[in-house]
Image (tube, rainbow, N blue to C red):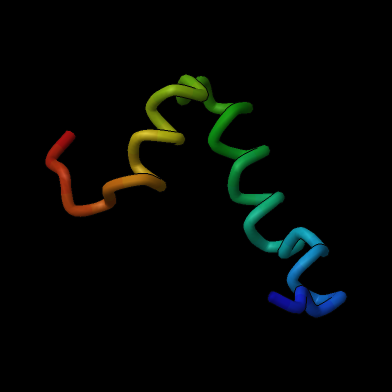
Length: 42
């Protein structure tokens, strides 16, 4: 499987979103759970 250079780079908007979530106190585990299953109710 060939990985394009753009697939290796982190999306700057996602990085900012995660940083903001951490700054307001959302735990890493909660962010990870949401990213793994966004349809699961919180």
